[in-house]
Amino acid sequence: MRSLTIGVFDGVHLGHTYMVKKMVNYAIAHHQIPTAIVFEMPYEAIVDPKSFEGLITTPQERVELLKKIGVVDVIVQDLREIAEMNERAYVDLLVNKYEMKSIYIGYDFKFGKRAKGDIDLLREMGKIMGFTVDVTPKIIEGGVRISSSLIRREIRAGRVDVAMHFLGRPFSISGTVFRERGIGSKIGFPTANISREGTNLVVPKYGVYLVRSTIDGSIVYGVMGIGVRPTTDTDGNVTYEVHFLDGEYKLTGKKLKVELLEFMRPEMKFKDLNELKEAIRKDVERAHELIFQKSYEQI
Image 1 (cartoon, rainbow, N blue to C red):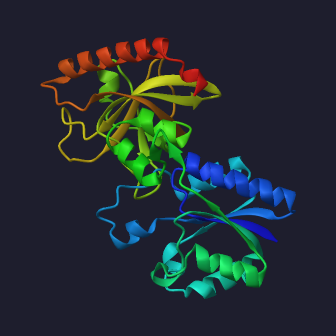
Image 2: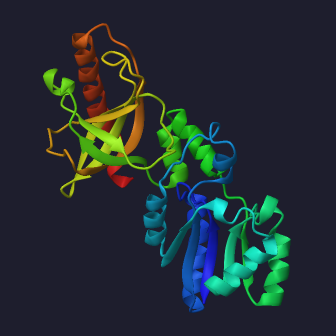
């Protein structure tokens, strides 16, 4: 028997965490398996991909975050596989295939073809089929409803400190470090260049960020440039490169997770490498000031 929660859970933000913890606690108390069905992409990304602002987290990251909260079984699905399913047939599937005995959903939960299924139908079928329904209301923080859409907008605007508040942790970028031209090393600021993992991911506002990583068990800080590098490049490709404040690390070919703590300045085009070098020097100086002023260790 399972206790289920269903959704995209992009970002696994504070609202998600509140609902999932309720589900986990109930499941444990009633000897049910705490289970999450996670859709890879939200409905709006499927019907209008050009307007979609990007995922905060990959499906695999969501799996890991949900398991940290206590979910035992995470089932990742493509929403398109069930989009044409009759709403009653979908509930039958949950009961008969997944042995659902309780379900935890948000106040706006819809399901079935053309989203005809709603909470009222779910409760009606629960009485007949023997499962309970728990509905989580809007989660309001500072007068604002916490949502994945809100967090995406904050990230795209460079307000990663605000996004961090609603996520309950820093927004992060992960990927494999690869070797590039070495321009950073030539001007005295070697960088680790990251190839992001996953597709349809949200791209933060172009600029320089104070960041944090864990390398070989130690927390290290750095400055990360996100953007198209207008001083040195013309191809328009978005790049992610971080210079660590306390030295250079041999990271080529390794996985690296970088947490974005503060937006420091927008991306700029400089007239030459010397001007770029001076700007990075000032970025590093400012990063040290921020680390001294704020208690990032508590985040």
